[in-house]
Image (cartoon, rainbow, N blue to C red):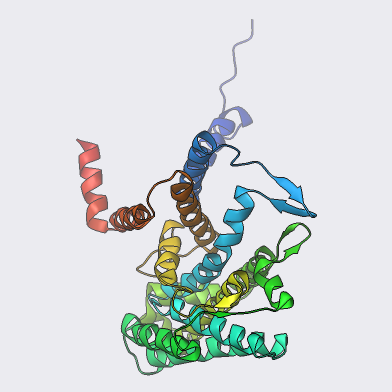
Length: 349
């Protein structure tokens, strides 16, 4: 009989378990694992308690179903979360997102209702959003105001301006081409999903194929060191606020098109809070530096799925706000260094 040869550490027999262990450890430590697990848990609850939740049917060459409805209604929040991701990554915050949504959607709907061309209405809505972003960026990057104070000014004044444009009334729009943006379908899917996919693809390309993503991360980690290293910190911060408002403006166009009216009172109300929550649920750090575009999208889906679940189960709508507050509390605890140390101490006992 031949003696068994010892297996060297470099041999495949010894390396395979090691690679498997590293793979499992890397999978468990993946930043998207927790948000995906939360979304999967919500979907499992929907599957068990909401009959026909995953049922899809085709009507008039369009896909209909609860899942499609959630994706369609989550589109504005996804756009807002996309812009908010970059702002939070630079240690900033933008609480004027809802006001920008109201201004953009209201202005576009008013122009459409006054028989202006659709292109002019959409351009005016996006132009107003870009002006709002320029205002925020100038206050934060130019004058050095605290982000929450600078954007709070526009949050209050912007909503008031939108209400002045409509005289506090809901202006109904009758223009089928305008309805197509937020309520139309393309290849059987809502057009809003294609808009969101295009914006996500463009942003992801900028973050991965250019140095922009690295610069944003560097500014979020240490803005002073980034400036001393030659990064134009002020210009970068100015850009992220303009980009955030552009995303909010596009979300405002989707909302106005979907509801077929200019509703300055309720359009985008508290959307900024949902966007911030979506970013944190997706693994973004409120301390800056750490961000995930895909994670923010998953966070937006979690929020919209949670809202749908609460309504579908017949739970009072007020509970939705309590649940969101609880989620915010848990997320803030999970990002607290003191809480993490306390948790490790309890786990070591």
